[in-house]
Image (cartoon, rainbow, N blue to C red; front, side):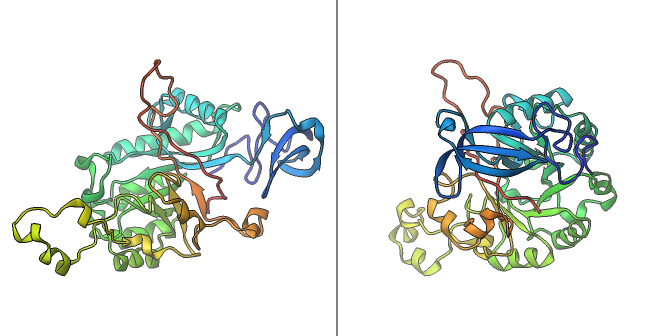
Amino acid sequence: MSRECCPPGHRRFPGSRSVAEAQPQVLLGRAVLEDRVMAARLVVAAGRVEEIVEDAAGARGPYLAPGFVDVHVHGWGGHDAMGDEAALDGMARALLRHGVTSFVPAAVTSPLDRLAIFADRVRRWMPAAPEDGAEPLGFNIEGPCISPEKKGAQNEAFIQLPSAVPRSALEPMLDGLRLMTVAPERDGALDLVRWLAAAGVNVSLGHSNATAAEGAEGYAAGQRRRLRRAGRRRPARRALCLADHPARQACQPPDPGQRRHRSGGHGRRANEDRGAGSRGPGRRVPPRLGRTPGWQCDRARYRGSEPSRRRGATAAGRASREPQPPGAARRHRPRLHRAGPAR
């Protein structure tokens, strides 16, 4: 599925029909390069940067950087991704103001009929999406085939076993469905993953209580992305250590300080063959994780010879970046990451 005004492979400038119709533009500003920020002049034509030349005239100009791609966002600027077309318009415009040039609106775990309505609404809206907003790339469905133990903010009442979800209910959603989150340890999950992968859907492993072995089965079935790799991992079960703990002998929970170990779970399967999505280094994800194999974006990928497998996933809700009264605490401060092309 592609937008009528934007053929596949083309990017748009805000306010233009498509880059194919746009005249070459010369931009002055501070170019964000691989290893430095440089005052420069950029020539952009047909959606590509044709030339970057050092130019002191750009020293006081705006920062010029690649746009962010957010593949998992539930809302922005007070607008809900599961709202009407006006909400999607507002969301697209608000995202572009914060540097996101393309995005995938995400639905929360909901009844299947409501998810079908969401999918149809996004499909109808995409050709008419505002030119002064971020470009929609499809839609994302988080659930309903996830683990109740790791439901997070999802409504447990709507969680279903994959084996109980008829394929006929999912087929109308396939057109435009870019990502779907599935917990691989649930009954029937592997068959569902194979079916979705065969239909071209990028299946995420997330909201899962899977062990490393169960996660490996999910990847073998066709899962290609991990959602929130470091979030809410299961405690490591060290029976001998806990049995010897005095608090255990007294039938009391052990001191939290004695149980700091966490099982790697499905996150241990990180390698160069799978993509990864996280909320942001420094909060749920240790900063050093961004430098480990399978997560780093090396020079070859930055130059474009190999697509980066790390993409932005803010999982932001409608309250994100919504105007706040003076002194009010912001509930969620999402962070964006440089993003490579989603596959």
